[in-house]
Amino acid sequence: MSTLSAIVLRDLKVALRAGGGAGIGVIFFLTLVTIVPFAVGPDMPLLTRIGPAILWIGALLASLLGLDRIFAADHEDGSLDQLLLSAAPLELIAAAKGLAHWLATGLPLVIVTPLLGLMLGVEPKSLFAVALTLFVGTPGVTFLGLVAAALSAALPRGGLLAAVLVLPMSIPLLIFGVVSTHVAIADGSLGAPFRFLIAISLFFLVLGPVAAAAALRHVRE
Amino acid sequence: MNFQSDGIRLTASGVSCVRGGRPLFAGLSFELAAGGAITVLGSNGAGKTSLLRMIAGLLAPAEGTIELRGGPGSVGEAAHFLGHLDAVKGALSVSENLDFARALLGGGGASNEIALTRLGLNALQDLPAHMLSAGQRRRLALARLLAAPRLIWLLDEPTAALDAAGKEVLIGMMDEHRTRGGMVVVATHLELELEDAREIFISNGRAV
Image 1 (cartoon, rainbow over the protein chains, first blue to last red):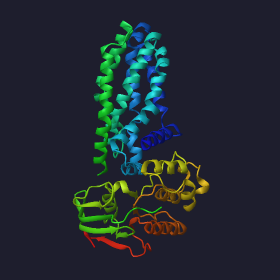
Image 2 (spheres, each protein chain N blue to C red; image 1 turned 60 degrees about the horizontal axis):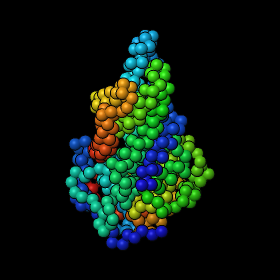
Image 3 (cartoon, chains in turn blue, cyan; image 1 turned 120 degrees about the horizontal axis):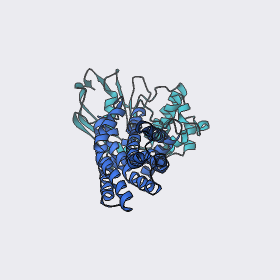
Image 4 (cartoon, rainbow over the protein chains, first blue to last red; image 1 turned 30 degrees about the vertical axis):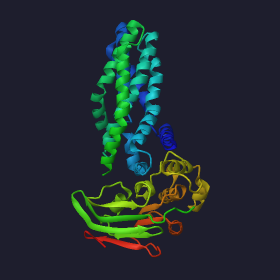
């Protein structure tokens, strides 16, 4: 277990230090949420209504940034070989790297969501609901992204490929994320859509590392 | 610390290598016992790196098998692979890099103090690794061999970027590793003075 916690710790350090790029997702999220009202116009009721959807799209796009670097950076400096020589199973190593990536890039998005929601006029009681659905949904996006990151590890300009691979697959997360937010706003409680969101996220949490490990073994050839 | 390596053998039988549809070498067999060493010689592109990667299990041989007889687990789990990339993270300090290697590849080896002193990097422990020169990065990569003891050392052009003193240290490390029962496979296009090392010469698709 100490091997996996060492990987999480190392990736967090690399991401949070200068040039790691952990902050860029939050800034992108902020920029996106800021420009939407300019496009939509000063229609407060409309913004309030579509606010949760904008927050979800913003968080989804922001979590795509840097996804391709999860394995590509290790591939470029030779660290990937060292990871492959570890006694720990590659699936768990991939999961550890996914967790570190989510902690460095996904969790900050969840934390700033209530703040950005205020900018869109989302009602205070729904801010918590949006943040909660993102807290459940963004790990799913990151772990789905692990597969794309592994596939594009050895490719130059793999970032675009990763985004193109991940976006269509993340549609179920987006649907149930936004729907469960609306249900929470209307009924005041999280209903069945939220459970679906949890289920899809858990599915990707399990599938992602396994598929990523298979892809990495293939890429190293 | 000595390795419990009596009776353990690294064996390759009938190994062939095909890269990008092009056959590099075929029918390579060898056996390496505890304390043994092999130098892999050959011109650029002959397949030296591919051979080391196949031994480490990072690359599947087109034909033949490579295995660790009488040993626990796979070759990869018992081996260090030092390629032309140093696997050093620039954002981490020198000692953090070494700590991570220990956590990843197994501990029980030299402390940072001892390993880095041996490689002449002790004064730089807290320096971010991106400040290191190419030779110093290579020395840090070599310090991994001491910090995380593993039975088999697979070294691909280990003297690249090293100065004369660094080369001396490396030769000393390899001799010491073999006295403790370790095995060394080193690919090089230069002469490396290793006592009674077997030589494998790869050229024109033949390995002898």
